[in-house]
Length: 334
Image (cartoon, rainbow, N blue to C red; front, side, top):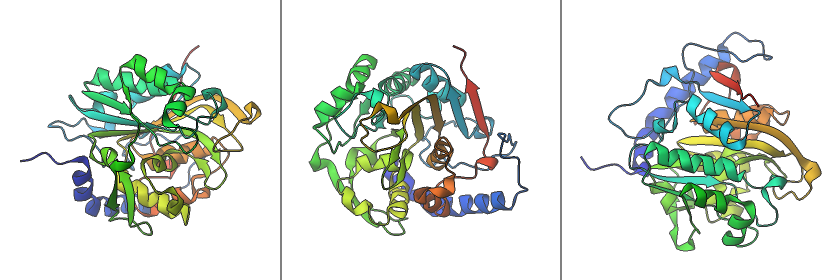
């Protein structure tokens, strides 16, 4: 049997996953209210789905892993490694010989990483290392900046240096590779020019920085996927729904949210260190909706406060009810 491309695999399962998650969400909503001041540990998984799960002959028992991991108070690399290890390790997501695309936020060339407009370079570097350790054949890192050239943004962010040290490849995204793509599950956005390599890669790892955004309120995992499309202006109309629609077409295998330093105001570009909060936190999940939902709480918001989380939950793209997720929180000793 010929190997399915990642895109073909996602299309195949898209007809069945919506019903499954919808039922899970309805059940979660009917559950007895819990104490919101503590993290609930549940024995049976309420989600999340893993539609981009690698096609391997043997899959680990998903029920033994948490749905979401939060690590705190370590170096960026330690935070990243401990989070992914607690999810079951990078081998859970990256099969032997896989080609991997890592998608950080490298939106502008204006500031260094301290200003929290771009993803922490050591978080990105750690992910590249872990992919190779898991057996990846190639790891490429890319974004489509709107401020400055890609080369300037890659260099000034510090990401290019850490990726090179980890053995990865920084890729300048060619305009010729954005291809018209039907978004079959889309409720409002039915077509977009999406980067071909991101659609066809074996594994897609999404690694946004958690930051304020003047229109979307927050840039998190789903918002970070805009760097993989050509026509961004169209997304900004009915932004919440269209971000969810775009997510249905890309579905990252793993989302790692960099909250090492968070931009609390004047996003997405920032420029004032007074707007930056040092959190020393990383969030990791196979469920992009769950990851975004937890990250929202770091800004004093609830998942339902963000339009794209509401839309994605309704579409069955993941679970936003944090009380019904198995969450593991790890504090790393200094």
